[in-house]
Image (tube, rainbow, N blue to C red; front, side, top):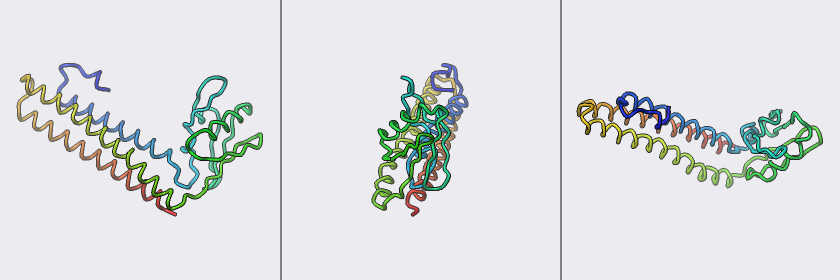
Length: 195
């Protein structure tokens, strides 16, 4: 249920339900973005959505291979088609991840080096922008829905009391989503700073 699917005669409850959905989507996007960040531990999420040019088509790595973590410092990529080994290796090398794959003709091994303290601090700073973008997305949803609710009251489709109750409910919902983002952020910082 996106913004365009709402009818002109949407009720405040419809608008608030739509806001809930869109705010949750913003949080899910933030979670996916943060999970792709290297923390010094091997995780398939580091490379699974990496685009690989395969027979002229760009495909996510997880659609071309099986990605496993035999231990905390190693990723193992086993393509379903051995002909894709070179393309996968090239995609990893050219990605901004800084990972260094080794190809033995059957599988690709990617050792995950531990992060230096300086690099951990840089990551925390750079990820702070992602987190702030997530909060801005939630607040933009709130602002958009606030305007629509005010419009309903202005057009005399709802009372001032109903408008105020809806605005309060929307603000409570926004506060809950911002708190979820803060919790996700705290968890990621803890994960990044753990040696």
